Amino acid sequence: MGFYCCQVKILYGKIPGGFNMHRFYVEENQIQKDEIVITGEDVNHIKNVLRMKIGDEIIICNGQGKDFYSIIRQISSDKVITDVISKKDTDTELPNQIYLFQGLPTKDKMELIIQKAVELGVYEIIPVVTKRSIVKLDEKKKELKKLARWQGISTSAAKQSGRGIIPRVTNVMTYHEAIDKAKNLDYNIIPYEKEEDIDRTKELIKGVKGKKSIGIFIGPEGGFEESEIRTALQEDVKPITLGKRILRTETAGLAILSIIMFELEG
Image (cartoon, rainbow, N blue to C red):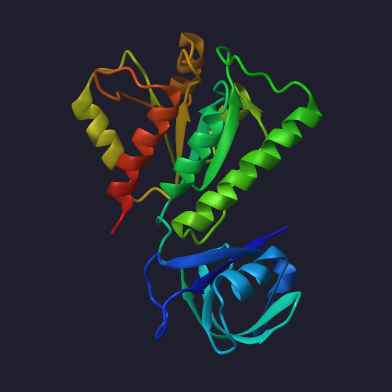
């Protein structure tokens, strides 16, 4: 099932290009050729919170990098109907797809990681069970419940940060499944405590330019075991250093994402 987001203008006049907009996500069947129907709790938000009226302009993004400029044609108790007047590419997405392979952390750290990773432009988040992972989602029901919550956090973060897509949180993978998935990507990096050459790391980070898909491997608390690092290096995953300080698992991925984001922007 595809998801779409509706971005609502607050100010009068022309549709602005900034972030002073509210975004609402709708399912694919709510978008037709020249018309979009908004339903659910967003109707109340448009009517009673934003107090929008017929003739007001909104932006609907299709979750695949396209923005549809629309005008509200009808507001009723259970739906808002808009007419599409034009469309353009979303300008908030990075030119590359970044995949975050995140070793399962303890407590609620995964929620923070997902939220911030989405804000920083990640394309997909893959929870990974490693040898040092304390959290084990053994029960299918428990895993599905967690995944639903994590996907909801991704959706909320995408809405808040003006994303043109909703990054997907995949099913939990084993480390070897994650390595196999990374083989299909153009470029992969992994922080390694024994990698001390900061100049080489800077060159490797610059190497992300021109690569369509980039994988980032982050270990859980305690990091990766040596055997896991060896497996990654054998598959051409490039080791980097994050400096002389020890970063928490919830900090490490965000640090790399921030650096890569600035490298790719513009």
